[in-house]
Length: 192
Image (cartoon, rainbow, N blue to C red; front, top):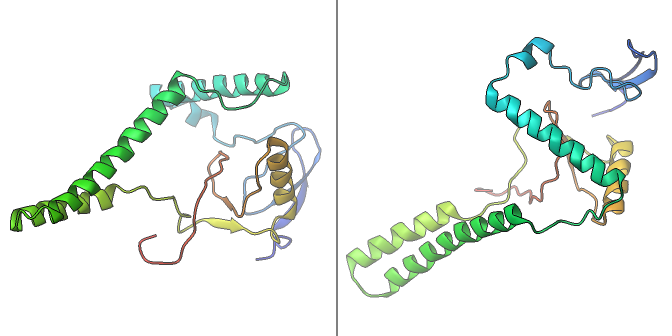
């Protein structure tokens, strides 16, 4: 895939700055933020109460995060009540899976005959179904390799260096307005 084939240059309709864009994606201006959110205004007005609340919460959180970053505060993860509660829930979920697996093994080895074996198999199948699995790439993911987007990878590597982590292996692109990092193992085997 050649990234130069789809690239075009046009002036921004709002400020006149030159926009270098890929024709496959939404065009926006970095100088004046023209078309950053291409969603029509009437679609914004049709949001239900929950979507409005989520957007307001995201906006407040984003503004607070921006204030923290610009003020130079310590950006280390804090252990507040909600993060401790999230850890407790995660531990409880994984503990249930471990208890199911250990109970299944115990039922198989306890010598209860057919009932113990059947119960053990059911518990082991439940533990297998509940096991943690790292997320994989979506089937329709557009993957950008370093050769396709060297400037984007350089920017991501620079951000990773500033925050003290390693860079990314792959960048995938979709139509959603979002950015995230996922620790993932990509495998070609069955059941991944």
